[in-house]
Length: 188
Image (cartoon, rainbow, N blue to C red; front, side):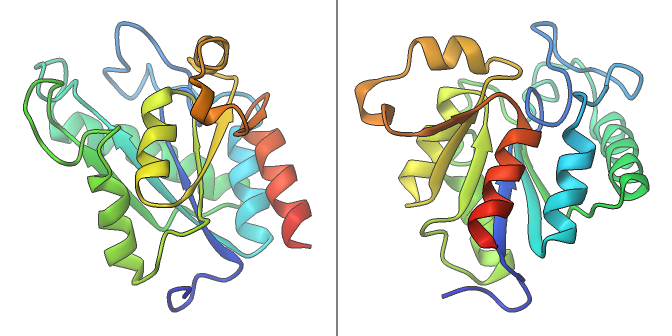
């Protein structure tokens, strides 16, 4: 039940720790937003292989007062420009601006962001690859029947070391570039 115009399928990416370097102090401005080596090229390779890419990202720095929506928009403009320059395309970005205790339905591990993407693309998320570096990414994917994929970049190595048994069979790759090669290989 793929949506209209999704090509080989939808791939949903977390942002911090998957596409760009993460920080315990949050990524608070455009200058701090730095791509992980190979991530922009991975997005370009997925795009050129016919995949549709979207981002689902918790951005509690807004609720915490560390940056505002305009600053986040500037970070995303930089990311989209760099992805475009590398030959890639991100079709949609959804974010949760809430804090951990706000009780929203969009903050991962809750599935709200992924459900927003399903509605936007008019598609089922069954089997859709969701690439993240944290347990909450895997949990959100599992909650909607998507296919969780863990990368070791960002918080990924720590996440892998403490994976609950129910995620023991999840695919794990060193980084987005390796995950992208695997997804492209499967679709070939």
